[in-house]
Image 1 (cartoon, rainbow, N blue to C red):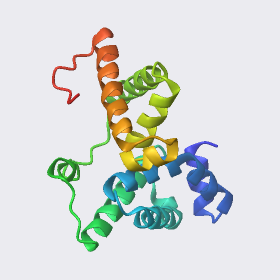
Image 2: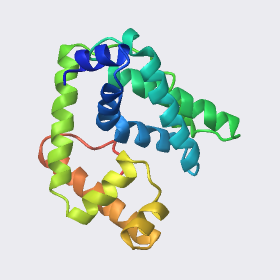
Image 3: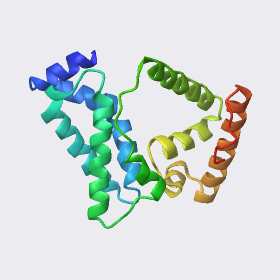
Image 4: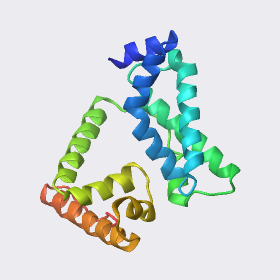
Length: 186
C-alpha cells in the first residue's frame, strides 16, 4: 500500500493501516528508541508504543513521503524525554544530533542517500552471516554486546572483536569502491 493511502486510511480510523505502518516501521522505531535508551529496554518499548499512538492520532497531519522522518523525530524526542526523566544523559556527540535542523532533503540528496543504503546493504551481504547478524543487532536494533552475546551464544568480548573486525572489513570494502575512510573511526 502506498504511504499516501496508508495515512489516509489511518486518518479514517482503519486499524489495519496502523498495523501495516507498524510492520513497516517497527524495527526502525525500536532501533532508534533502543539506541537512546540503552539499558532501559522496557522504557524503549513504551516509547515506541507511545510513538505509534501519536502516529495514529496525527496520521492526517503527516505529509505523504514524510512518515518515517516524522516517526523518527517523535521516537527520538520521546526517548530523550524518557532518558532525562530516568536521570540519564546521552554522550555529547549523540546529543548534538538532536540540534541539527530539520530540513527536507532535495532530490539529489535523496538519490545519494538511496545509493548509500544500497551500497551498505551490498557490503553487509559480503560479510559472513554471523558477522552480518552481529552488525544488524548492534547498529540497526541498538543491542549491546552483552545482549548480542546472549542471543548468539557467544561472549561479549567475542562480539566486540567481531564488530571491530567487521568495521575493518567494511572500511576495506568502502575504500576499494572509492569511498575515502580516512576519518572513519575504525
